[in-house]
Length: 274
Image 1 (tube, one colour):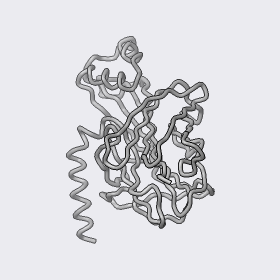
Image 2: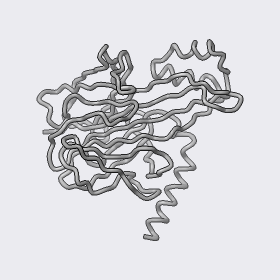
Image 3: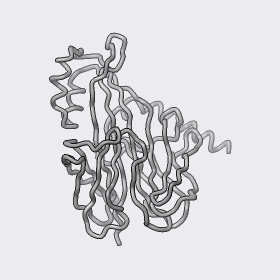
Image 4: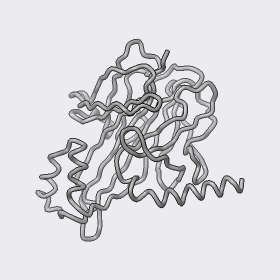
């Protein structure tokens, strides 16, 4: 027990040292050690980074407001519990089998933009060019301003069976797959994107996929008028769907209050080889 506490404290201090430069940027997702489980032990990392590669985060209750697993076939939910510094952040024996939905909501985090160019790069990357003009129309400063952000992540795994379906978890911003990726009858994945429980139309979605240690493939789509998207999936690949909304916020930049807020949605799953 003492050795585990020392190890967790070491992870914690490394986390504090590196969080300033990495945790502010780019995608956040849940990455299971195994998407397909023959026993009830679930292990999954929380990760942040780019192109489906990134830094592993520890279990820390001060970082999140929700961390649960939910049955895709029954009305059953389990709260994820751990010890500060645990890596992987999710490590529990589940009483739920078949399709299992893992979901996580962070607390608000903050980015301090010293220069407008960094914010400009961010909004252009996320296809929100119109926010550049809006920034100045709102008389926001061109330097030294703050953005707050919150992230909502899901992951679909299976335990001792594959039956069940994805469903809404109550997250503010979330993907819901229309078909079970572990029981595909063809090679198409369809999904809805919801914001405030309503379908989100005309929204950019980035789809990352990888297999083993290969470099990730990346495609972008836009949701239709029903908030849906569809793409061809390949067997044996892990998938990450990601989307970002950025909105202005009533804050006083002179008091270092956020003037922009972004919300991030992600979901991960794999397509079985067989």
